[in-house]
Length: 77
Length: 217
Image (cartoon, each protein chain N blue to C red):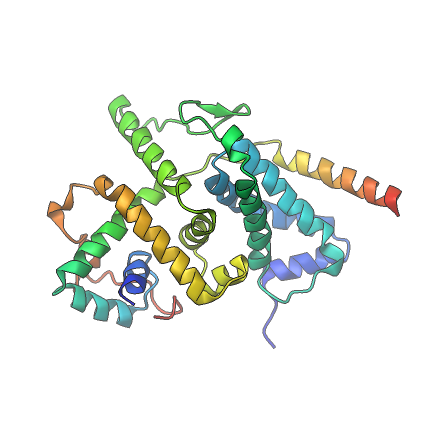
């Protein structure tokens, strides 16, 4: 349960009551405090894992594949 | 009777032959799907190729589409399946981006941020390399779970439907993955551990978690 609460708190997905209750516990629990700090490090680091923009030709290539797929399907039927 | 989600309504129109609605779905979900696959396979060209396959499969399935689940659940199930297959087939050994290469298939992957100094940019790129390697070292299913949880902000139940496993299995995947990432990325802590708990998590900070409707804990 501790791991689940830690992840949920750092991900900002705990409802207010649960967050407050957990934070009260963390205030007196060095182990949980360390766990939250460590999870926050990961969460922040993952924010840097940003992908590049999708290429401009993506849609055009997709629609060509769809058209080819449909031609193939018509020939097969 | 609950109204259909917007995506499901669009997909039903696609089923009825409306190609404009398919374009709207593509516009909305293209980037998240490509980015999800890029984080999974860490190769831009492969990610885009797989993403195209995702949308091709969505289009092919249009005649049989029924809104039995959220559209994004279905969409990311297809994407995850393709990503996991690609990783499992071991093609990443040959096509994995060299971290020293700036571009992949002519597409610039990481554009330097002009707001950073040259030194800051070096530090940032080194940090990014560490994060990429840490994520890349996760077993594929753990990687998928983290990507869906962190970037798509899916609830455990929805991740379970995407990964075709139980909620408890999802939690196990996630917590093991985060544990591995904590071990590998601990040295990236801002300002070292001297500062202890980040302020926003301290009791009484007034910045508690998101209100309501979150993961049930």
